[in-house]
Each structure stands twice: as C-alpha cells, then as structure tokens.
Image (tube, rainbow, N blue to C red; front, side, top):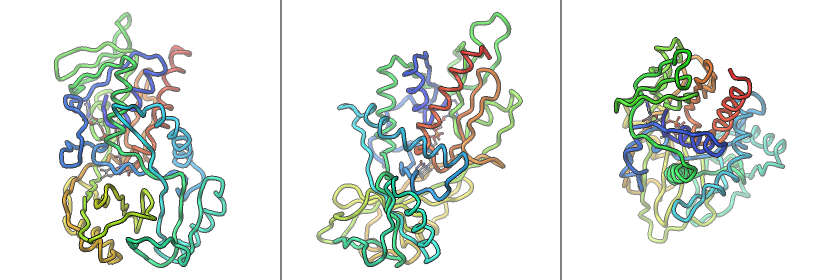
Length: 361
Ligand SMILES: Cc1cc2nc3c(=O)[nH]c(=O)nc-3n(C[C@H](O)[C@H](O)[C@H](O)COP(=O)(O)OP(=O)(O)OC[C@H]3O[C@@H](n4cnc5c(N)ncnc54)[C@H](O)[C@@H]3O)c2cc1C
C-alpha cells in the first residue's frame, strides 16, 4: 500500500524475490512527472534525493546500521535499475561545509575514523577554487566521495519499469480498509479498495507515509505520525558565464542542500517546518543561506518552487519498520531519509516475509 519510493522499491524487491506483488496507490493513475513544475507531490516526488550515509555523525544504533546497509546496496541497485528507457545514476560526491570550529573538529575526527569510506576533511585554504564561488562559512568542509544523490523522479520511473518487467501489478486506487480473513479464507488478509475491489493476500505491506496510521488504527495498532513540510526552490543563474566546475553533486551549507543541474540551474532545499502550511519567510532565509549566499546566488532568479510533506513518527525514531502481526508489515514514517533508506527498508520487508513463510507465522 503506497507507491512512493519506499513502497515502489519494496514492491520491486519483493517481486525479485519471487513474490506476486500488487502495488496500490491512487498516484499510479499518472506517469511519474518529468519535471518539478509538473509534480503532483507525495514525499518522494518532492524530495531532493540526497544520500548522506557515510557522512552521518553517529557510528552506532539502528539509524546508523540502516544507513550503512542502504549505502552498501545503492550502487548495485542503480546498476540493476538503470535502463535505456529509464536511465538512473548515482551522482557523487557530497561536501558539507562546517558552520563553526567545533563542527570542523567533529568532521576532522569523523574523516580520520572513516578514511576507508571516502571521507576527507578539507581545510579552509585547501578548498578547491571554483569559478563559481562556494558559500564560505570559513571553517573548512567534509568531503564524502561516496555520498551524493539519486534523482528521485528518475528512481521512481526506473522502479516502476523494473517492477512491471518482473510481472508486478499496479492498481491506481486507494486502500480503504484492511481486514483479517477468517479461517479457511483465501489468504490471510483482505484489502478493500476505493474502486470497490477486494484483494485476498497473504501479507500486506503498509508504505503509505502519512496515510499509514489510519489504515492500521482500526486493527488496534496505534502509530501516530505528524507532517513536517519541506519547501524547495529552483533557481536560474543570471551571471554571464556560469560554470559548475569544481562543484560537488551536493554542497550542504547550514543544513541546506545546493544541487546544481544543467548549465544554469540549481535546486536549493529543503526547509523543515512542522505542520502542513509553508512559511514564506523561511524560504527567503533559505535563499540567502542565512547571509552566507555569494552574489551570484543572491542574484539568481527563482524559476520554480514546490513543497512536500515528510511523515515523522510521534514518540518513536524514524523509520517505523515493524511486523505488527502475522502478515501485516509496516515500513513507513521515514521522515527525512526515505530515499536514502529505501533499499535497507525493502530488504528488511523481504526478510520479514521470507521468515514468516518459513515459520508459517
Ligand atoms: C522537500 C523534501 C525534501 C526531501 N529530501 C530528501 C532527501 O534529500 N533524501 C532523502 O532520503 N529523503 C528526503 N526527503 C524525505 C523523503 O522524501 C521521504 O522520506 C520519502 O519520500 C518517503 O517515501 P514514502 O514512499 O514512505 O512516502 P511518500 O512518497 O509520501 O508516498 C506515500 C504514498 O502512499 C500513498 N497512500 C497514502 N495512503 C494510501 C492508501 N490508503 N492506499 C494507497 N496508497 C496510499 C500516497 O498516495 C503516497 O503516494 C525529503 C522530503 C521532502 C518533503
């Protein structure tokens, strides 16, 4: 249930494992949009697709393990999904500018500890000269060779294509209600859709982000989530000879990602705003990078803007990966990292389904 990146990635992975999968989401009525201006947005189509796995500060805990697992899978996933009709690539590297001496020191230690993972601290004088100046907080930067981004729209297209090629079925409708089948029924679960169809299935995987809670609440599973809005700007440079030479795929400054694309364009995002209503003043502050924006960035013209909602679990760390009861699996609430964590989430769901088949639970 749910054809954002988490649900589509999980469907493709399960079909690769040999399962018969039906993917259900009203968004499947239309093709994945080609460009930001055409986005009908769920979290995934609003996303920037930044993959920050190795430069993550912590070195233990579930969040760290999921990131590591995903980063180990991404290269193979992209090479399996890349296809002439739905090209896909990983764009690297990622550079995070230090905001203070304290942050620079933490980054130096991280780079020291994770040299084998392509991390390097760039002292301020050694930052590469770029024809287009980077914003310069003045404390150096952390370079991560293997982090970067994947285009979320290209990823969704590639996942849909690969899923269909595996024989996966897509239904453009909403799952309205889930019911446990009685003894002797076909499959363990019934899914009633807004089309009025009844699907009999052995397992239901809920990947419906903010729509997940209301699907499982009537079954006695209380997993509230809150919306956290993100706004993104698409900018066009006005300077006469634009160049992205010496720019990484992603440059992060004060938590804002700068993502160059094409000759003159740049995505800038995203804000983090609890609730569902965007605040225009946060977008203005983002455009000035809190007063660190170089002149070319201040002068850039805004040619597009969009927003989307992230699903943050209340009182629990993101994401929610839970086998709630036999054949009812929740893979949702990925908050700010659903693209990054999609491969690890999908593998986790595959393991749950395979182990429930083995144990008959
Ligand atoms: C502006 C912005 C920037 C972001 N940048 C990044 C980033 O750089 N890197 C990163 O890793 N993450 C990023 N994220 C977060 C990431 O986009 C999300 O974590 C991720 O997209 C969640 O994917 P999902 O598939 O769980 O949810 P979604 O993409 O929200 O999809 C959920 C789907 O479920 C469907 N649905 C809901 N209810 C039902 C139902 N009853 N029946 C059927 N279908 C249903 C909806 O129609 C929807 O299509 C960003 C988010 C935003 C908003």
